[in-house]
Length: 64
Image 1 (cartoon, rainbow, N blue to C red):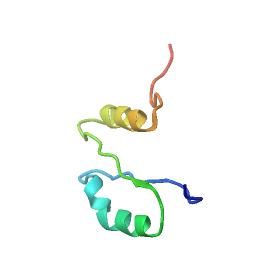
Image 2: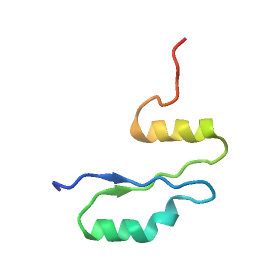
Image 3: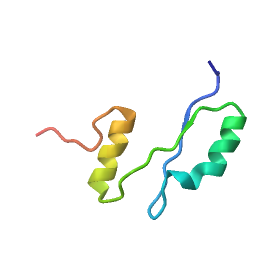
């Protein structure tokens, strides 16, 4: 187990997780655990939902 933190890279619009490939390789070579989740880019709500699933939390959900 590494003492280094895990890193999550999030892509912006008009890109996907593969846009981080070179950065991921470099960070992994330095011993970091790196993730670059994919998001559907169909709507902000869908992206927020996918982000929440990745992190295991209910992001963007309001209680009434």
